[in-house]
Length: 456
Image (cartoon, rainbow, N blue to C red; front, top):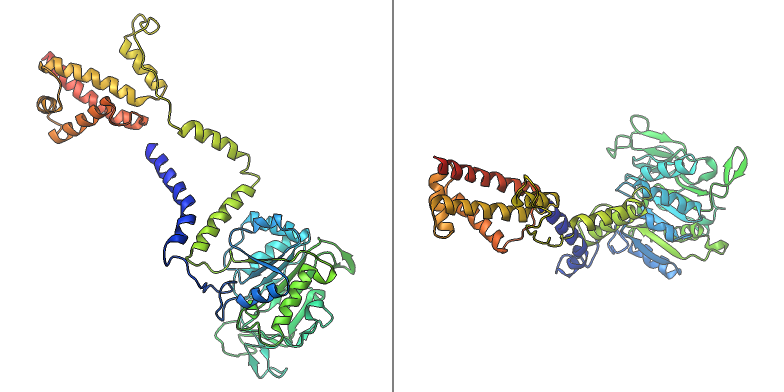
């Protein structure tokens, strides 16, 4: 138990101090983040320009590197999730559902990542048909026919009356994918026609095996307070959700092409309800579910994510106080017990003082003191049996090597020196029952040899 306790203490120490020490190590943290879709990546595949443009429009853009469970404190904010690669845990999912129900805005843009896990679970818990990402490249027609195709198509059909397309004439995509299972009233942008590269070989084969779509939806918008069910307006919450089949239109390379920048700002304005008097300017950019990268930020975020998840779990919450009390009671060093004296309480008929002390030490788990007691008794027997003037390790090794031929001199010396150190108080007397039993059986073996030799 002592080794297990030490290992746990070391792990806790490392986890607590690593997040403070690692940033101080030269070269460990990068000055430039090269992670795809990171707010801090200024290269073509980052979202540095998105952050700058939103800030210029009065939004407070903050990265999220831990867990979506913190959204419970950010009611009415807007969350952006681009190309997620790691799955969402149940606690995060429930917080995300509550977040959009209470009026939060959510943008999920993906093509070939883990976006389906987010949308399927989220919409299922909201009670709505779930849009899904096809997960295969979508090509758009250059001329409106089926003879010429491009992987950077221009959206040629969109709902011009929708606020997210205000002053938008041209949205240019880059290797998008199609959205499936989107109700007609929620389809706000599409390619007409579209071609799914089913075998992902980048070869245009419109009929076999690739799939031709008359209308390929690429943007879906949901106002939870105005969902059409059988011709009736039904409210599923106060928030808004936009699903986009191409996250790359938000990166530094594509954001300045066509009207992509205007489209992005309009989209965030609609999600945050700014045009309707919304006052929450907070935009939370999810970096925690991006492609895994070995960095201090990822390590720190993983630790915070676990802490947030564990602290928000209502099943685990009642266990923490009990666990803390038990840990303090079980793991804190025990106070040194008082040495027992040969009082009348223990001098009972048929029992010796030694037996009573051993029993008391065992019941109170003071195995180190029991070992000291047994060792002193063994020393007395060795002195008496071999007629030694005084006890010393060297003399004891010489006589015991002959009395216990199955034990080597080196082993005997190591054991005797260890027991001497414990008796003199040079080594801690605290030990587990397993360690005590190992010492006990060795002493028993030595004592049997000493007593048998005395009788013979």
